[in-house]
Image (tube, rainbow, N blue to C red; front, side, top):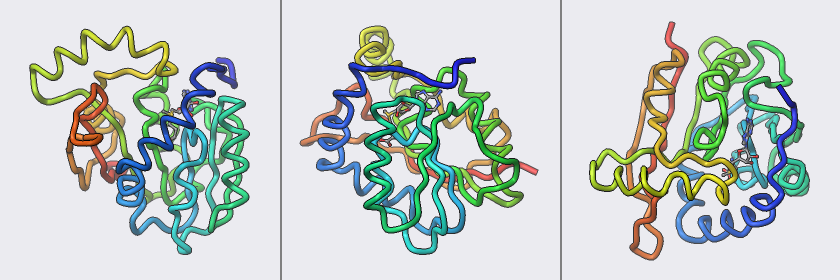
Length: 212
Ligand SMILES: C[S@@+](CC[C@H](N)C(=O)[O-])C[C@H]1O[C@@H](n2cnc3c(N)ncnc32)[C@H](O)[C@@H]1O
């Protein structure tokens, strides 16, 4: 499998989308996902590094993996301004360039919608987590409302290309469970922007632990 991934159009547009979403509530979602995180963290598909400034001092190191070169360059810049040590490395979620049992927390935000091989990526997250480690996630997902889900299904093929390969209809909670995690906490909500829903509004934030 190729170790890099190039989405030049998405990589140019995503920083603006991320900033817009952050200004309309995503910052609070990121903070909620990261509340209480401590120790060594691996962040999978870190994008522009939007999470970095929200890590608390209890975090001793963040290894941020990002395969897209333009986004990785922005993440490297964000790392220099982060309140905790952050190292940004190239790599794919399905083949993390990291040691076994090395991390207290694995962070996935808005990335399990895009990764090609979700079971492979979650198996890798399990591999690099220490025993007793945890997965923190903030993801947009398939709606539980049948009518809304139908709209997502219709729009999904149109969304994928400008979205850098993003899938609108993934059942990410189930994927996490099927990968051998037990979901400890989960909040399901619609992320409304200016009071309005969009196809990526159905969202989850939560914590999962490898099942014993
Ligand atoms: C919508 S962006 C989210 C970025 C960031 N996590 C955030 O919260 O803003 C999706 C990210 O997933 C990355 N990505 C896509 N496929 C990936 C893969 N196979 N392994 C790791 N990252 C991947 C993209 O390069 C991009 O940075």
